[in-house]
Image (cartoon, rainbow, N blue to C red):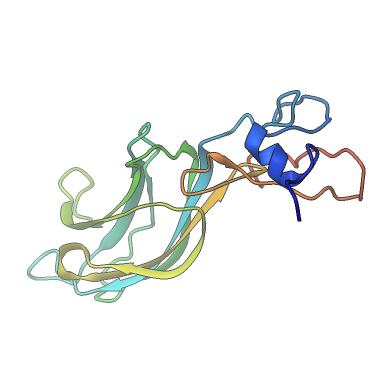
Length: 186
């Protein structure tokens, strides 16, 4: 057990990323991802309970999701579920490929729809997006309970909490040069 040789995976990590491949839309000539620090973010809004929008009627709830920090992401929203005390959306919201800068956060807001221009904000919760598939997360905006799943997928060959770290990928054919699949994932 001595020091690993210059071609070992450990030695490659110390230098950054290197391998022989043709540059392309996702890779530089030395096989480094062009998407370092970015991730595809999606949230599946499951269900909620415990909100009261208007005093005389059940809640007409919808949820908005936005990633903030490191460049404002697009805001997406669920459908409005009319007259429900326990809305169950089961709706996936694609927020797109976003920069995961330090301090990036997912903002979920629960609203009671009125006329579209005077909707009532029932509550807000914040979650730090981290790569991976997170099942059955929950938060408590405005005294209610909201459950959701969060998916944060780093670009090809990337990992770490901000999708900045290179992760060695085994070639699909032993000893052959390889290319990453297209980015963003479909």
